[in-house]
Length: 382
Image (tube, rainbow, N blue to C red; front, side, top):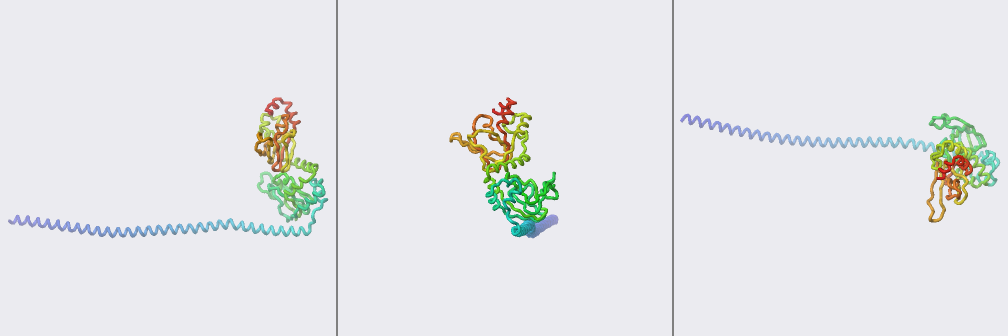
């Protein structure tokens, strides 16, 4: 009986221990769950705070860069605008000063007479009196201070000048020099009253070949390009031809025809070097004004032309079945070849679109050269 009672007590103790252990385990789980809930809430709060600070930091950084970019843009804007404003202000100031100088010069400068203009050089020597008067009325007064530049080498030639007082230096750019001023250039001539300059560039659309620097206060007269060309077209044929001859002489120094240039054309492609050199020596410079008919359809061909500068329009004015669209010819092109080689009239009308500077080769000169080389004659005709 005691043994059974002891066993029962041991069983009861173990059961009580298991119940106590299970109770403690459950309590531990409840405590862990409560602590996990608290930690989860803390983590959520911390995550929300981190996201808030991230958003705020992004907004702050973005705002900072916006302000920085605005400052940079304002600086760039001011960096660009302030020099422009200064330049515009200085330009307006110079313009007012120039107008004041011109008004003062007009008070003290008398308009040129026919005799004075004809005495400036060969350009105006043979002009009729009525055309001279019309040309003088188109002139406008100009005035420059000592140290001013009337024009720079490479500028567009749009004005002809007549110097009436003061003196100017003609300056060309030194070799390998990038500056156009007098300090870095070479003075090749000094012009004194009464002289004209800039006529060749105005007539031929060439850029200024030299820089004109005022060594003294200068007053003079100027003529716009369009007015100058219009009055040239009004001259008698003999006078215009003499002026054009002087322009052609200048042109021959600038645009010299080289054998290599002719060899690139289809006509002279198979010619020898000796033949090409002989052709170059036989070619003559010619200049044509704007809207001039160089060749007329149906006329006898007397010369072929090689264009050095300028543009012209080649028009076929035949019947409706054989009419072709106009062709634009430019530097390096030739025309008038077929009528020179073959016994037939010109098939095209060629009209200049602007001032043409070209070289011509007469039919007789080309025939004399080709007679010495029958193979060349066959090639060029083919």
